[in-house]
Image (cartoon, rainbow, N blue to C red; front, top):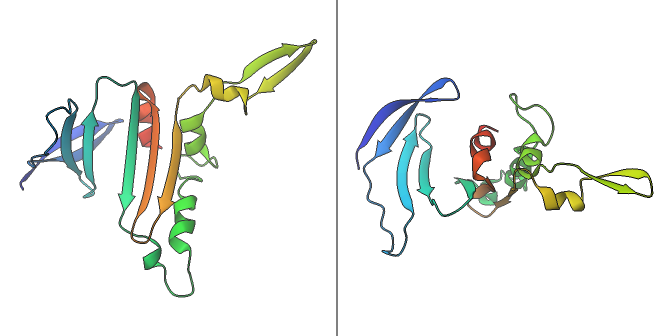
Length: 159
């Protein structure tokens, strides 16, 4: 295959994006659009556009799993999977990634003159970003994935 690179602006910064000339085979009944790109850091991305949905999703697979754990450090790949959800230099608040994806608006409930903030159970009914997130570690892969309301995708990817 052949790659050509274009310079794109994303969140105020420049990024080289390789457009790959790879034919993506799909069933005739699949109306979604597919495109493969390669980022300047060599990350390969498969973009899928489905105009009939109000959701967006992303998944990242790393070809490292628990078979790669060093002797004496069994469980390291799974441990690192969990660590990626905690914080980053840009978003230093612990668990801000998961909280953003699944963020709920507090609901107010007025009962017998008392004001209750419900964010756990009833908050699920008013999920502002509409998302969920998870990850798994297998023998040879670690995969991170989320879904979110389509209008929140850019901010979710930035995290």
